Length: 92
Image (tube, rainbow, N blue to C red; front, side, top):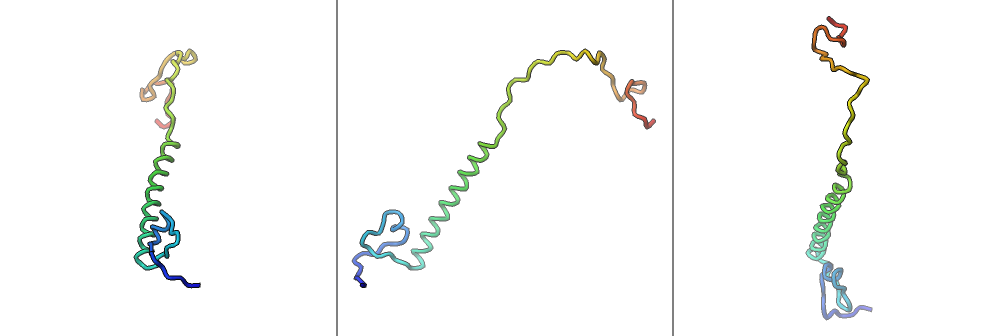
């Protein structure tokens, strides 16, 4: 039934190394220590996950653009700001 404990370990120690035949201390300090260690691990995991996600979603560098051939469909370039331009706005 109830046995006498010869050794008592905290919750954090029991999770990390195992309790074996020892009793586990279920005090507020033991619970808060284990919870604090858990929160530190969560923050570290979030940091690493965000770094990994940023690395996976960043755009890949594009290859060098291909040289473009001159466009022979438009033999001239026209300045739209010029008054007698071929392309004028209808609001004059």
